[in-house]
Amino acid sequence: MKKLFFVLAFVFLSQSINAQLFTKEKIQNQANIDKMKYSWGYFLGFNDYDFNFDYNQDREDIQVQKNLGFNVGLVGNMRINEYLDLRMEPGLIISRRNLIYDESYFQGLDFNNSDLIREVRSTYIHFPLLLKFSAKRFNNIKPFVVGGFSAALNLSSNEENPEDNTVGQFRTKRGMLFYELGVGIDLYLFWFKFTPSIRGVFAINDELIRDNDNTNSPWTSNVQTMKTRGLFINFTFQ
Image 1 (cartoon, rainbow, N blue to C red):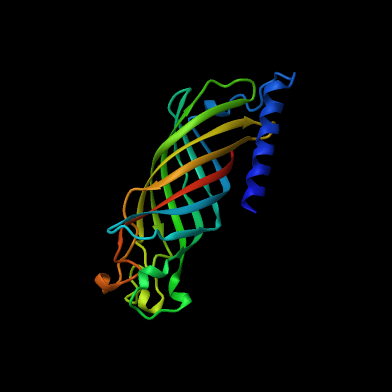
Image 2: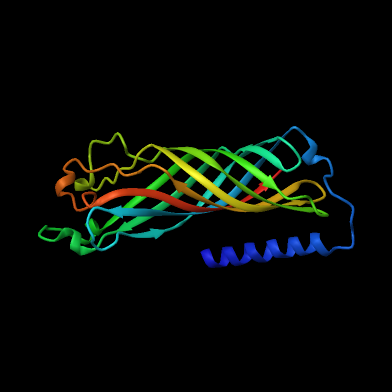
């Protein structure tokens, strides 16, 4: 499913770029849209979230089983100059990951197969503040790079839940900070500006809430830090 999506997205993007670059028609679409001080839009997209672990001791890695997630949100753009824009992209990010533990984490303990798997559901209210650095517009395309910082509120964190992994509750922190880097292409169509982009998202702070008896916990005792990292593919309409 993921591979098919990425192949279709690549084919669509390639065809759009080819049409915009090599068409004989040189009339600029949406010629004044980038001259506005403020502009608005919305985005839809997909995410592929992972975790990056650092460990206290050298043991088998915790494996992350990833699932394709969904993004939706709004875009607010403030023009600084011809090549630089300040953007806010508040959105809703839905993701699900499964953590797979090796049996060695439970050495000397009684366990069953369900103890080896922990599901981590994340529903982020995501607030990025980004700088967009654009190249000069050519015909009806304009490539750009984007970067900045974001804060997120995880509505599925279980941070306040007093129960822990001993009863199947894997807990994460509610508030997260990220830095983001990405690239994209503005495509100026007849009715609107369409922007496919790809962006990496990297957590700054540790996301894990330790178990109540962390010293003896097979799930959290060996984890020094657990930080989200992910990939966004967004399609923006302005």
